[in-house]
Structure formats: C-alpha cells, structure tokens
Length: 97
Length: 418
Ligand SMILES: Cc1cc2nc3c(=O)[nH]c(=O)nc-3n(C[C@H](O)[C@H](O)[C@H](O)COP(=O)(O)OP(=O)(O)OC[C@H]3O[C@@H](n4cnc5c(N)ncnc54)[C@H](O)[C@@H]3O)c2cc1C
Image (cartoon, rainbow over all chains, first blue to last red; front, side):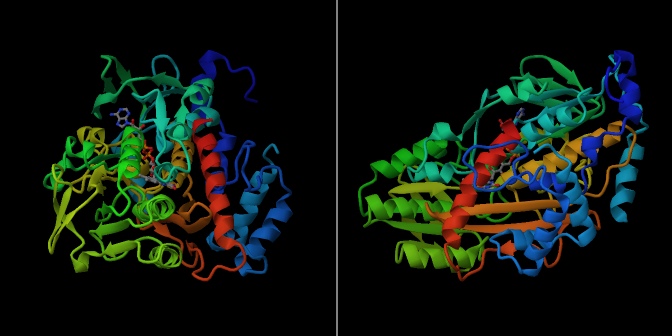
C-alpha cells in the first residue's frame, strides 16, 4: 500500500496512513536499548528480533518467576503482564532477524 | 485519566486538527540537539515516517559520549572511542544543520539558528541536555572549570581531568564534589569515584579520594559502598550532606573546596556543579522555575508550550533518571507519538524501561533498572519491577554485568547514531 507515493499524496498518507512501525506495542521500543535492532559487533547481549514469539513469552515468564536466573531481566520482566509480554513477543518475532 | 485529558487540552489549545501539511506538502519536524535523545528521535522519526521532513540542529560535527567517559579517566579507554559522527543520521535521510539553535518562537513555530537561517516546524523536539548553574556555587565559573574540571560534559574536560590525575604525585588527595538532585546520571559521581580509585590503586596507591556530597543518599549506594570496602579499603571517604558534605564555595587558585564544616585542599579537584536544562530550553519558554522542563508523559510534549516536545536530561520525566538509556527510550516513544499526532491520531500510553550499568572496577559491574508508565500525569515506576543488582553476588555476576555494560554501550551508540 505504501509503494509509489505520489508527492501529492504525501499529506493524505500523513493524515491517514497507518504507521505500522509506530504501532510497536508499549514497551517494545525500549528493549532495543540493549537488544540491538541491527547486529552490533562485540555484544554479549543476544538479539531478540526474529525470535519465535512463544520462546520469548516463556523466557519472560521464567525470568519473572525466577525459574530462570538472570542479572537484570527478572527485574524488567516484572514490569509487564502476560498480555503486554505477548504483544511485545509477537512484535519482535515479526522483525527481521 | 488525567493524562489523556491534559494531553487533549494541550492539543486543543494548539488548534491541533490533523492539519499538519506545510506549503510543500510535507510535515516538518525540527530536532534541537544531537545527543542520545535528539539523534535517536531524528533517526526514528525518519524510519517510522519517511515522508517527514526532519532537520537535526547540532553545532558539533562529533558527539562525545559521557557514558563510559569515566573509563577514559581510568585509562581503560581513549577519548576517541567515545566519539560518534552524524553520517548514519544523514544516511537515514535526516537533514543536519551544523549550527546552534539561538531562539525558538513557539507562536510562529520557528527556530532561529546561529548561522542566520530560520527553520519552520510543525513539531519541535528539544533534547539539549544540561547546562551548568554557574552562579550556584560561589567561585565556580567557566574559568574555574579549567583548574577544577567538571568533566560532566565529555570531551576536553575529560581529557583535562585525566591529565591532572596522571600528573598528581602518589599520596595526593583527589576531591570530588557531587551536587544535590536532580542532575545528569545519578550513579555517575560514584562510578567515577570507583574508577579513579581503581586507577589510583594501581598507579598511585598512597593516594586518597574524598567525595563531598550534597546528598545523604545516592543511587546503588550499598552496592557501591560494599564494592569500595571490598576493592579499595580505606581509599574512598564519602562525606554526606548531614556530615558537612555540601560544598559551599571553591577557590580555583588554591584548589580549595569549602564545606559548612571544613576546608579541603585538593591535589586534583573534580567539581560536578549544580545543573539545569540546556540554555535554549529556558529561552524557548519550556523550562520552569526549577530550571528543568515539565512534559506530559505520553508524547513528552511541554506542558508550557504546545507542539514542543522535550526529551532526555532537560526534561522532568517523573521517576525516570537522567540517563542515556532513558533519553534513547524516550526519543523512540516520542518519535512514534509525533508520527501519530501528525496523522491526527492519538498516541498510545507508553511503557518505558531504563537500565543503568556502573563499573566499580574494570571487571566489576552493577546495575539499576526500572519500568515506567504514565500515571496521574507523570511517568511512574511500575511497582514490583526494577531495582538494583543483588547485594550478594553469586557466581560471576559482577563480571557478567561488567560485560553487559560494555555491550550496552556498543548497542546504544549504534541505536542512536546508526
Ligand atoms: C560521567 C558520566 C557518565 C554517564 N554514564 C552513563 C551511563 O553509563 N549510562 C547512561 O545511560 N547514561 C550515562 N550518563 C548520562 C548521559 O550522558 C545523559 O543522560 C545523556 O547524554 C542525555 O542525553 P540528552 O540527549 O538529553 O543530552 P546530550 O547527550 O547531552 O545531548 C545534548 C546535545 O544538544 C546539543 N545542544 C545543546 N544546546 C543546543 C542548541 N542550542 N542548539 C543545538 N544543539 C544544542 C549539544 O551540543 C549536545 O550534543 C553519564 C553521564 C556522565 C556525565
């Protein structure tokens, strides 16, 4: 739908265009402060873009409960409920690996 | 939902119908300041909505990062490893105006530039960082900072402080003074004390560090103090406010710092002065009497002037600290909210994360994290989330967090500058 924008249509797009990337669920854009959106050399922090959504959800719930030990992720996972976590997981799963 | 109401009120006051199309047919966003907040905002705006006309105003062709600059003091890094250029931002389609913003006209929605040009905007993003309250500490002014560096804006000041430390005789006294809240990077003075002690212990082990504080408590306090006792016993003395830690005057000629109780003559003095939002914020009318900028918690639009969003250190962000991680996270939320607003849509309530690592030694890291959401008109900590590293470290936790710290820095630099 967004292909071939005519200059005259720009304003319409601005008025009406669903800005998909802008619709990342609450919290998702903060994750990339550590989990790089594009590959970064020499980082020991794993990327999450392109990971399977159920895997992210399981890991987050294990971080939250403490079933899976972590340095910082347990503290962060506790800020999100199941529904919010699922939305973030689905969003990252849909991002290019 | 005070948040929404407030938000709608501002938007209505600004006559914000979805009529954002300029004469050229492109909505224009101007971003002032190419640091962690501004550079991220500019790049993200363009990535989310390529049709936007985005201009980043930043006088310096090279950004020198404060995060990890304490490692430069300890000789663990060089200053050029702290430096980033704007090529990645340019490549993303952002126009760079390599000059300062000198005046914002919130009525006319224009920004005057030092090079004589004037930019019109539909939305303005300001992330000018901090300036120092030069008047607030008697004796401390720009000239004094050449003798008693602050090194709280990284670059020449960082190099100057490192040179002074290296020139000091073994057995010297390093005095560091930390300001009252709020200020840039709450754990920063204590990471700095740690890494200076780390370096002194190796190269000038008879030396001492005196930390004069205008506060009685500080970020990650017990973790820092445990680390100091374990790694640098007897080397760091912290004097809190209640024991006369507040520095009331300095004398750059004799490197003397005066507190309510005593005078301390330093071999090297690092004065971190009281701070306020970058000066352009007050000029634009977005700073309040505290010197900082109040914003609503969804799009970070100023509560004082419509169509101006303030990010990062300059803004009052409720529970969020003034950190590069926070500025980057806020910028991404703000960019997506601006895209919505320009499309005449309502931005969603955000959730933001902050994580700040500090090094107590090269291979000893600690962290503090928080998760925030809008509540009653301000960004508020989500209860039960966040907090600091455990006081008892099992396994190689401190070493692991030190590795995470440097990985975070590489990532945030790439996320910000491309
Ligand atoms: C020693 C130290 C260590 C730190 N360590 C960490 C850390 O480990 N982790 C962390 O998250 N944070 C850390 N910080 C904090 C971090 O540096 C700041 O929070 C961050 O830089 C804030 O970003 P900002 O965009 O608000 O401001 P800045 O990054 O300061 O950017 C502001 C930019 O605006 C420009 N500017 C100002 N006025 C104008 C104008 N009128 N016109 C045009 N441009 C203008 C400036 O040139 C500058 O480039 C540290 C800070 C210090 C001092």
